[in-house]
Image 1: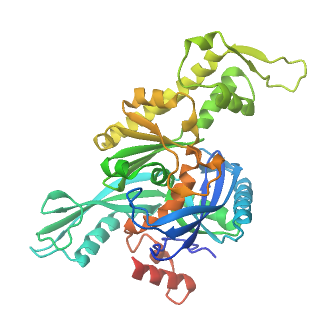
Image 2 (image 1 turned 135 degrees about the vertical axis):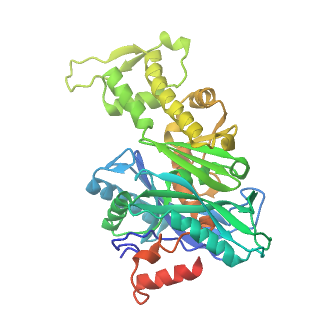
Image 3 (image 1 turned 90 degrees about the vertical axis):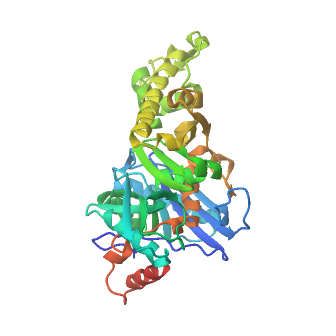
Length: 443
């Protein structure tokens, strides 16, 4: 039975990891291109200079991935098809790990992700800030974010203020008259989350936690200096491109656009009159986001679309393929640039952008991104994880690895009593009620 099968649909909250114990964590990355299940063993680690915020070492002991079906631009289009792919991915990971999975941490790309800052202030009357005051001001900010049709995925205090002085990281034991907090809240439409949960339940699994895709990919692809100083992670997937902005160690903004690698493929299929799978192969083998004069003379063979044996492949200059690709990539990057500009977080991002996700592997992409975004760009691969097969070490697996890292940072979040399990789960006698009670005590 799922932890959140009530009609109110409160999201499950992850239990904080014990820094003394090992844990087995299972995650599911549902994307437009592929569905990935990973099972990892998290063992406590010593504090170190490398990735200092990580409390555990992650070793992947099982992985299974399948070509995605039933998902279109991040949204579930066919429950049966997706359920089948989820089962196959989980089965493969279970076989490799030699254990059975019953609940998973899943990513959320659908449901029109929202990213808002809420501010709350409480009166201190000149007294010292106590733990209870922090709880009170955080609860006041969380309360503002509650919406009937949207569910809270993440809520992170991004900074405190005392008597109007902003930028205070930890006001505990300081004196003042008014304590304020800025809370970054990421939400998604409840209906989309319900459908996601339904699909996973139908595969006889339950959802342990839900994580916004941009948050997960940022956690995997950014180094601590980037997270601290301010940086944007741009995850270019098959159906969607998501943006996450980090600063002072926290996620401060997210956004998503419904453009990705699949759009490049369909442009090629249309422009060259060839099948989708042939267009995908052309993109991987021949395409570049940069125009090159020598490509005008180089011809490549385009397989015909029909089944007729007499249809001959056509020859086109390689430059034509690159022109089609370049137009779509530039459009996507311009859209991202404008979104970052409009969000007001452009100064925080500064000069640092990390590209990740499967579509970021296109030849010449970093150069085009540097020009359009006018920032330093690097390709981000998932970091700090052992046991990944070579095929899964690239940027296409950042979200899945980020979901694995997430339990280590889940305790940075604060949730209002009405936003999580507690609002939706009956009395304290049921198993679910007891979980609710335990959550009340844990957070």
